[in-house]
Length: 424
Image 1 (cartoon, rainbow, N blue to C red):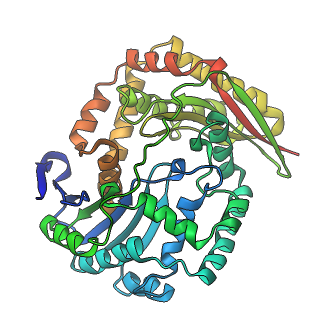
Image 2 (cartoon, rainbow, N blue to C red):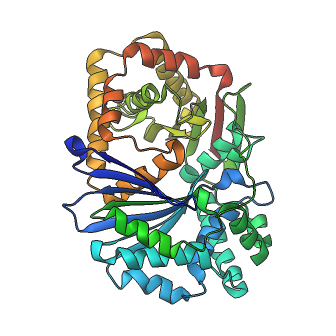
C-alpha cells in the first residue's frame, strides 16, 4: 500500500511538495514547479565514505565511477549518449554520508532519465578491463587533489578532527586501496548498501508526481527489499584536546585550516551556527575577509565554513598566506572568534547577514538541481521536507545572544585542531 503526503508552499516557492513511500520502502519525493520545462531527477543512496572501514576506504566513490562503465543493458558509450543526445545531463557524486546519481532533462524525457538512472543503480557489470582502467582515472583524480593544497587541506583537517573514526577518511580513498579493489568488492558493497529502504528518488521541476511513482515502481523493482542489518558507528560530538599537524610541500604559499567538531544537522542551534558562519567568513563583507584581507593584506583567500552531518559536524576557517604571516593570520582568526564570544553582534550587522543568507537561499530556488539536492538530502536526514518559508523564519529568529552562546560553546582554543601545509 502506497503512503502519500502532500504539502503546498506557494507563498515563496510557487511549488507543490509530495511524498510517496512505496511498499518496498523506496521513498519518492517531488517538488513540482509548473512554470519550467526541465526536471532534475536524482536517485539517492544512504551510503557514503563514513560507511567504510580502513581497507574499504574509497570504495563508495569508486563504485560511483564504475556504474558509468557499463551495465547489462548499456555500454560506456550508450550511457554517455543516453541523455546527452536528448540535450540532458547525467552525473553523480559521493559525500561522507550519501551517494547521488542524477540527471537533468526536459520534462518530456523524464521516463528516459529514470530508465538510465535505474539501470546504473541496479545493473552495473563492473567488467574487469573497465575496472582496471578506471582505477587509473581515479588515481589521477587523487593526484590532482594532492597537487592542490587548498583542496587537500580539508581532507587533512577532517583526519585531524576525527582520527579514530571513518569520518576522517578521505572520500576518494587511498591509492593503495584503489589498486586493490576487485569486482567482488564492488558487488559486495552494492549488496550491503543498495536496498530499497535506503533509496530516495527526488525530482524537482515540471514533474508529475504520480507519473514518477509509476516509473519508480517499474524501473526500480529489482532492488532488494532486505539488506544487511547495518548501523553507523556514531560520530564524535566533541574534541577532547587540540591537535596540530604540518605537511611540507614544494609550494610558494602556506595553507592553514583550523577549527573544531561542531553540531549535527538536526541540532537546535544549527541556525545560529549558520548565521554566525556567514557573518564570520562567507563573502567579501565577512569579518575575516574585511580584517585579514582588506585591512592587513595577509591573504587572497580566507573564509570559514561548516559541514553538518547526521550526528556530528565541523566548523573550519581557512586561509592561504605567505609563510611569514602564518602565526599572525592564526592570531587574527582567533581574535575574531573571541570577539564573537565576548561581544554581541550589532543588530545592523546581524540583519545584513540574515538578508545575505535569505538572498542566497531564494536565488538557489531558480536552479532545479539545487531544489532536487535539497529535497533528497532533506528526506535522508529528516524524513520530511522543510519549506523555505520555515527556514527563513528560523534564520530571522536568530538573536545576538544565540550567536554568542554558540560561539562560547564551540570556540574553545584548547579544543581546536590546526593543520598547515607549509612551503618546504
